[in-house]
Image (cartoon, rainbow, N blue to C red):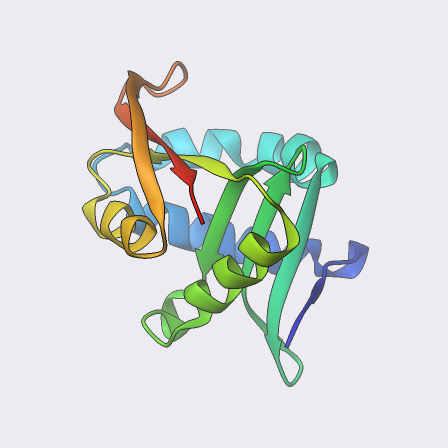
Amino acid sequence: MIRKSNDKDINKIMEIWKESTIKAHDFINKEYWENNYNTVKNEYIPISDTFVYEDGQEIKGFISIIDKSFIGALFINSNYQNLGIGSKLLDYATKEYKNLSLAVYKDNKKAVVFYNKKGFNIVKEQINEDSGFKEYIMEYSK
């Protein structure tokens, strides 16, 4: 089931974010993500529309949309990856929001392929200001 997150979900969302982001971005120093934990928790999640995928009582993944147009996060608990949860969350978001874009690290090849298969196209390549790594800006087109 996909539902809008609430305040009691934040710790589980952040647990998934931290574990999954470090795993997906192993080309970036782990400390970079640990240093950004509080920024994500206290700044980005509160300004986002965040939806969780919950199966029974356990949150298995989430997607966060900033300004009703930018996917700031899509992460799945590593124990439940490759089961279609990310696709379900992304399909939900593309139905709820007309125009979506996202930034994905060029070296996160698995994610780039995933987003491309889901209808997102690369429109720009740039250097991420915070990390210094190359990223793609991708936009969804129906």
